[in-house]
Length: 100
Image 1 (spheres, rainbow, N blue to C red):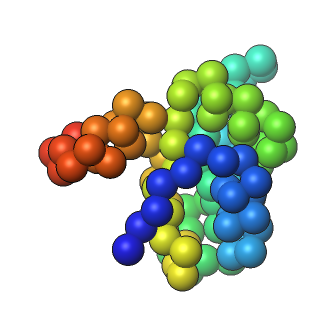
Image 2 (image 1 turned 60 degrees about the vertical axis):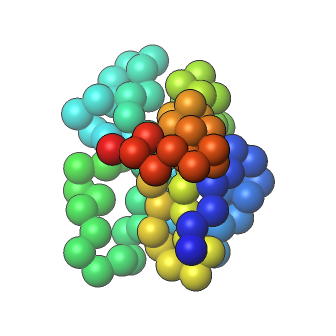
Image 3 (image 1 turned 90 degrees about the vertical axis):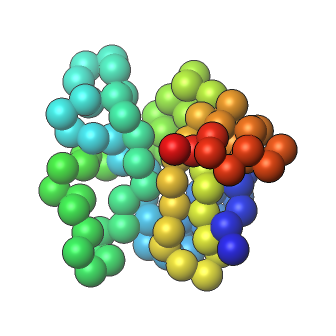
């Protein structure tokens, strides 16, 4: 079962407990533009973190707020997905096609 949150402390604690770090997609990260953000898990098997560059939590959350994002995650696994808050709200209302 997954949860959705926009709470910075919850996101950071969840990620760090699983070895996660804030990151940006290298090809979108340049100068003052953070680009597309992700949470990377460098120690995870099959992790494709070569395409990511580590950023600070401050940079991550600044972009997270600027783009009005939310995190869908599973407490007992490393599964996570960053989605728009509008999509998160539609899913909370029962619109199961919203994330497609």
